[in-house]
Length: 356
Image (cartoon, rainbow, N blue to C red; front, side, top):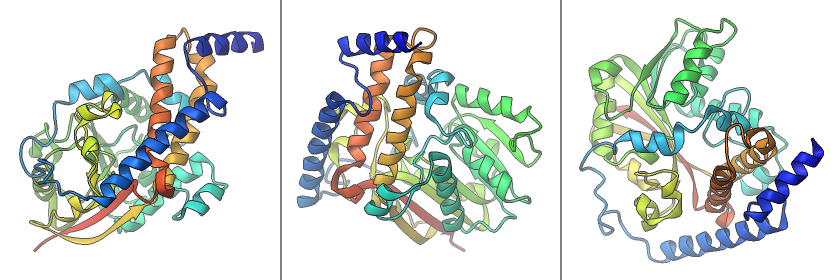
């Protein structure tokens, strides 16, 4: 086995593929980080509005067609996601280690513990009391649903996803009597937010509309919030967790302009203030910026787990080209969150309440 791993590592190195901790990958990630830091500093020195950049946040479809995004990313083989996601929630979004750069770096939390801490923070900031009817508009592998069903015995939750890989995983868990998703308090809807009609999602049914990491895939903010309004009961709330930048970064507003777009076609990283302006139907209760080193550390843990799983993935799941493709993905994403101690590019939280 050891000889096989050594031979595989040599083969990967011949194709320019190096793992976490190697000098070669270290130099590559430092160069990427320097590039993004220069870009972020440039944007801070000359901040531009979305309008000045030609980005219309309140026009057009809610999102582009989801099929390309699913095929390129979210419907990758299950074995790939299983190789690096936490074993408890299978959460494919930022884990939460702490507030400050120093505390994040020094945290002793495991990935599993940090994912639970993220969900606990979301529940606190969304003001979840334990009796709500909730819809999660991008449920992934049922991660937040698992947390809610475990922590709040009187909550009911609906999860929505267009990913066939995620749907297949969730349906399997729903058949396991030991899994929290095997519950009459949980419902799964297959389809994409923005494509499914409101009556399919449940018009006027929910106390809380929530999203975790879907706004990166949404293009029309006004239309999105109008849909949230239609789903809520009077006085309802909506809470959103998404990747943001402190000011607009032109390349990250158009997925065709940056390398990350090959992994997330049709996606967009909004500046922090963009969602705060969506107050036509809602009152903004609060917003928070979450230090990006939380995501850097999450990605670094994912990267290490992925690399350690390559001997199992190679041949049965991935060829060398696919291994290289996803290895570069982790390095690229880490470099985006690392600059400026995570204070420019990170995650934002927003809590809104429906106006009377």
